Length: 617
Image 1 (cartoon, rainbow, N blue to C red):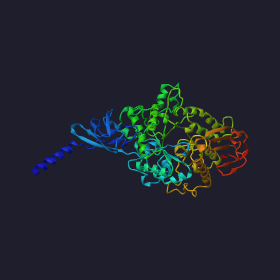
Image 2: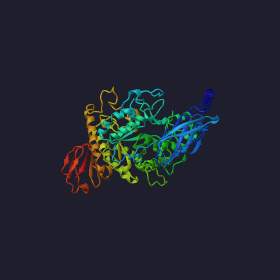
Image 3: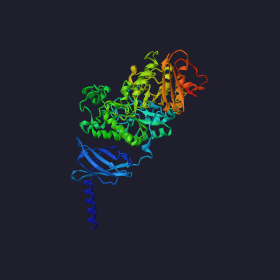
Image 4: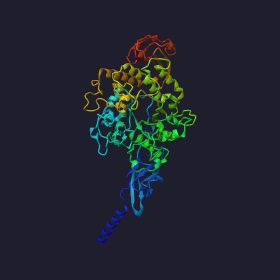
C-alpha cells in the first residue's frame, strides 16, 4: 500500500512539473508599485517569448484586472490593473496559463509609501541649483569604472570617453556642495546608457528603470538622495522622454512600429521649435520637428502611442516615489508631443501637488519661452501645465552684456530689455535662470579672464527674479571653450575628484588665490541669499542702465535690497536721487559682499567692474 502511495505521489509531482512552465517573463515594468497612490490605475508592460499566448488572471482582493491588451509583437502584453484605495502592501499573484496546460505564476509587489510622500515640496525661488555632470565630478568607486558588457571604456585623456565619475563621488563631496551654499542638486542623467561610444553624457538611455552600473545602482542612487536630504540639499532628476538610445532593449524586439516616430527609416529633426506654435507653420516643417530623430543613435519616441504614454508617465512617478526626488528637469521638452507633455505634467502634479518640474525650453526669445509656461494665454488654446521654464533668452543676454560697452541696446541694456519682456510670462518668478550649463559654452571659458566679469554675472544671477542654477566648477574658474573644444571641453573633470589628481579644489588649500577669491565671493552671496526674503518672493523694480551702471531693487514688506552693477572700467560716484522712491527716509545700508556699512546713501562710491548688494535699513 505504501509503495502504491509513493508511486502516486511521484506521479503527481511529475505531472505538476510538466504543467508548470519555466519562467517565460524577461521583464515587468514598472518592476513594482505602491499602495495609496491617488490614481488607482496601473498598466504593466510584460515582456517574454510568446507571452501574448497566455491567458492572464489575477485573484487578489487588493487588485482588479481590468483588461489584457495584445499588440503587434506577441512577445508583449499590457495588463491594466486597478489598485484599490484600501489595498494593503504585499505580493499579488498573476497567473499566466499557456496552451497545453502549462502555467506560470508571477508575484508582483505592492509596497507601502513613505509617510508624507504625496506632499513632498519641490524646489522654488528660495533655492539655488548646482548642476553636476556625474561622470566628470568625482570617482568615488573605482571598482565600477569598467563593467562587463558595457563597451564604452574609461579614458580620461579622451574628452568624449568615460572618465569614471559616479554617484558615490558626488555623495563623498556633499559637504563641499553644502558649504558652497547651494540648496539643490541637478544631476545630468544617471540611467543606463549602454551605447558603444560617447555614452558618458547620459542622454541616450537604454533602460528607463536602471541606473548605469558605471555610476552606481538604483539603491545607491536612492541612498545618495537620502544623504543629500540629510545635508539640506534637494535632488532634481534629469529625464529624457523625446528619445532613447539606439541600443535600448526595445530596439532588439520593438513592441510595435508606432512605438517610435519614422521607424524603421528615419529623418533627423530640423530643430525648429517655433514650428510647434507658429500659426503659419507648414505641416511638413512641424511634422519633421516633432517626429524627426534628435540624432541617428537616438530613436525618437512616439508619445502619441497610448502604451508608451502610460509607460513614461508611470516611469516618472516610479522614480519620484522610489528615490524620494524633489524635482524633474525634462530634457528637450518641446521636441516631445506637446499634448502628451501637458498630460504628463498634470499626471505628476496629480500625485504630488507641490512637486517641481522644469522643462528645457531652448529658444531665442521671451515670447517663445512664455508659450511653454503653464496658463500662458496662447491663441491656439494650448496649456503646457509646465510651471517652470528655462530662461535661455536671459542667458544669451548675460553672455554678451558684460563684454560690451553700454549703449541703447548693448551691454547692460540687453539684460534690462529681456526683463522688460516679463509681462509675457504668467509667472516670471518661475523661470529657471543660468549663465551657462552643460550644453552652452562656459561663461568664463578661460580661467585667466578678469574676475570682475564673472562677479558681476553671479551677483546678478543670484539676486534677480527666478530660480538660479550654477554649473559645477564655475566657483573655481573651471575653464572650457565649446567653440574650440566642443562639448567635451565644457565638461571637464573637477580637480581633486580623482585620487591621482595633484591638487583638490574641494579644499581651500588646494585652490589658487584667484579660485578662493571667486569661491568666497559666491559663497558669501549664496549664504546670505538663503534668508533673503526679498530675493525669494519680493518684487523686482529696475532702473534703465545709465553710464554703464544698472540699479534694481528687490523688495517686500520685510526687506529692501538694492543691487548696483557697475559694468564700467572706471570708478564712479553714484548719485542716488533718482532712486528716492526706495531710499527716502532710509538711514543706512550694508553691502553684504564686503560687510561694509554705508551711512550716507545719497552718494555711493563704485569700484570698477563690480557689484554691490545693499540691504537698506
